[in-house]
Length: 254
Ligand code: GLP
Image (cartoon, rainbow, N blue to C red; front, side, top):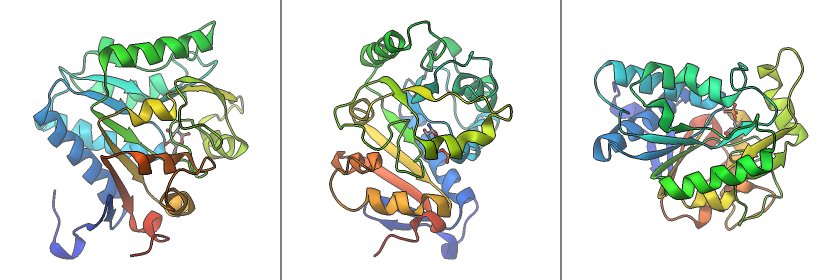
């Protein structure tokens, strides 16, 4: 990574502030590459969303440069829309294939995304929770954050003890993700890992970039768990690093 001292990220307790979104994504990818070297058979928890796209591009570049292998890794994605075939371009399964899995040496049979197209989505959610319990714990969980503070698709109001389940998406989430559905036919339900499921990960890296995430970042750091800001649940986890760009960090003091 090319950097100079003027551009070194500022480190706060549990929060690393990068100068811009590109550098923040590079830092997250570098953390994952280093982690894979330490633990090649790691169980990774993965996230989707526009924020993650440069992270996966960095990981593909690192793989092509011979700096990382995913050959022995397993992955569990956080969430999936209900009612979309896995080949739908907006489905998180096809998104992960397109951004990462198709371009690295991962064994796709060890990549897991909730089955949003199952005839019984609640049963599929329960199976997913059981699969995480059987393979996990998740060693390193990557998280983004919604504008309303959601993690995965745990919307405001999600309890701390929630597990993988079917949830209804809030209107702000529908608005934020509408661009991925040019035909206007957007699912209103999703399967998501619960907050308790996420908190079981050994280590968590949350990436937030851009001014639209500023308020959610501030609310998540207000102290303690606020049910109206699901990301605040991370305050109860012992090994969480927030990597934020200067725009997303602008509301944090100190
Ligand atoms: C999406 C995903 C989340 C993601 C968040 C932010 O709806 N379910 O896992 O972290 O919302 O997405 P973006 O990076 O596009 O802002």
